[in-house]
Amino acid sequence: MHLPISLLFTTYHLNQGGVEQVLLTYAHGLDREKYRITVACLEGGTVAGEIAALKGADVIVIQTTSRLMRLLEFFAIARRVKPHIIHNHACWYGLLVGLLVGSRRVETLHNIYHWLNWHERLRYGLYCLLANRIIAVSQAVMDFGVGFFPFMKKEKFSVIYNGVDPNAMNTATDTGALRERHRLPVGVTVVGFMGRLTEQKGLSYLLQADASLKSNEKVVFLIVGDGELRAALEEEALKLKLTNVIFAGFQRDVAGYLAMFDIFVLPSLWEGLPVALVEAMAAGKPVVATAVSGTPEVVTDGETGFLVEPKNADQLAERITRLIEDPSLRDRMGRAARIRVKEKFSAATMIRATEQLYQELLESQ
Image (tube, rainbow, N blue to C red; front, side):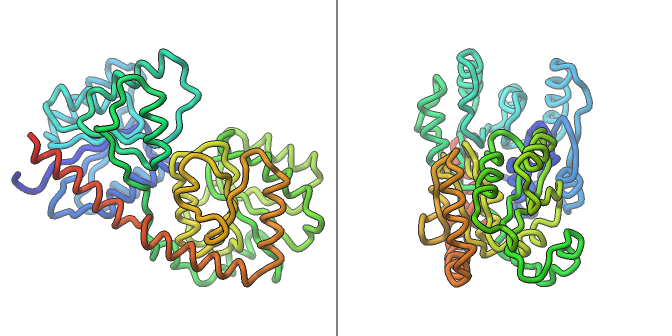
């Protein structure tokens, strides 16, 4: 195989979220002497701009609402860049286009799509027959995919955990400006969440946990992110008379906000392999997270943080309180969390495993 290898990533949008962060990590980490990277999507955004600014990476945004025209546009892009591999992320077009142009095809299964009805399950199972290999972002996601979708074969799967750059999550040393922006007084304990404000993230239970704390005068819940439930969550916080909750909105300064957190909380109802959780652990933060899907593969209960039952506000409150009251425990768990990410969930590990999969595909042609 002559270098560079042409690699086409296909996805729906490049604005915010775990899938987008994974694509950004690939764009940063893949060897430019070995790969020529193109990302084709239907909607741009912040991540699209960051990828486009990288040397040796190109982003193409398809601007049409017609499904047929979208397919033709993806096909035209593939004809132009001549990809050796098409790596599809949450998009209905990539694998089909890869088949049409004769590329090797990789599908990444990012989440537990339990809400799909029977014909959507059938359609996605049939679609994944077009993939030469399927990456699952956790063992739980692979087990779900094999059991939930028809035609999914375990032999096609490889589990490759989402990874982050631990050094990039540990760069913020002075958070004074951010603390001043959000009027965080000295000595306050910051319990932080970072992610999309959607049903999946279970934030209503976090607000209920806050309401049940015996004393929250010196605790602030800082919720970083945006989404369709923001207004409803703000209204719920008012109804619960919570005066210690700050909705910070979407922020790109991930490292800066994580540096402000004393505790990271992820009360999700389901997950694939949550990137925000891995980022928080890489930043040396103890976590309290629900034991759903791939999360227990990341968090070692009692060592790097605490795992709790989903939809259990009382358990959330109890574990958060333990960390609030014990700074030495926070420090010990935070250091263990960072070590765990370095050992198993680094960007380098993810990229190395993916490159090995690519190589196997190309050698099998």
